Image (cartoon, rainbow, N blue to C red; front, side, top):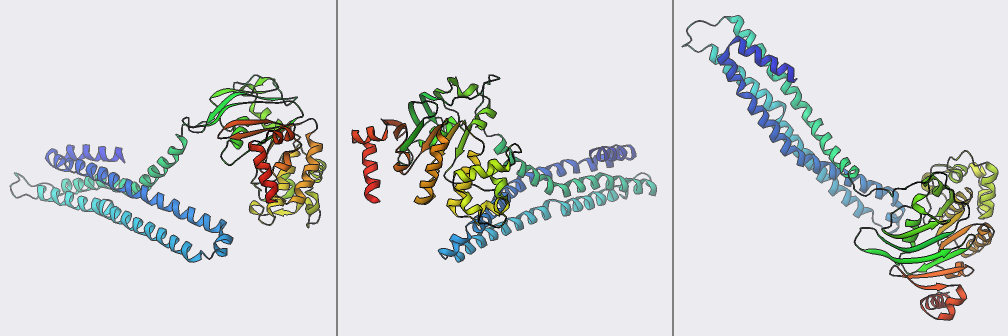
Length: 436
């Protein structure tokens, strides 16, 4: 298009210099229109994209939370919210169409008609010294067409171009996020063979300003179990997050088998550290694939053994297809406890050296939890275990327990030692027993 515009201008100047200068005056007008359209449309397209994102979010929440919406009779409210968002999107779209219809093709066509009229008036002006040959007039009108057609084509593409720019900016805002994953200074050949964990004066902050963990110190020897307790927001999960290298800590040192955790290959950490979260997630497929997670090295026998250990085989064996029974989106056909048992089996089948339980039994009933605890006692042999627990009875047999309050360790010891101190742990344990 640029080459066509330049060649048309050169041809016009070669045909008639004065008429060429007259046509050149239209170029800054077109550039001004392009600039004006870019300024006006960018705000509208940004607003349109934001509203479209809100509608998608609204739809997603409505579909995923449909049972909750029906349970509390929120259909009318959700419908009104969707109508409001949809109406706002429609009005924004109308404004975009108005801007496009004013500043794009129609305006370009108008300028083309004006330019053609100006050229004809110039060539037909009665004070011309000589008659202008008809061929010159025809050729010049063709040059004008070659000058404006590429501009009209470019203006037609401006909508797509502007939409792409706005969408690209939204993506680059994510790509330009300065929060990076923790980097490892890997020493090749390092392996986790024993599972000894040491926290030395570890402090951590999510935002770099407000510390969540303050000077955390503890040691867990190979094969031992550490219980971590504390109220909501005390920093229990943050200890797991920094040890799993989901976030980087800014003070102190974490050692596994006497080696700084930052020197261990990330693949080794993922292989030897098994994590079970409170909220399990299941993928579309079957039960076996959700336990194996497409690890071809895990056999069907290993899957069954892991399921038996956590007592998941009780309901799996009763299902049609058993371990090949279909799993719908996020395991909607399973209860919360059943999903958690499958999540347990998923972690245990990898045979981790360090087992991390983040309130993993909080969503299972007492009977199932008792059976899991029996299986875990066997699994803990030869494994180091970190267990965040809400119900203190589940970690009563831990080798040591740390009590967190506002990101600090306020008490440390065994279950009996902490009860004898009659401090924070004693009050919490007494309160839970009285409630039961």
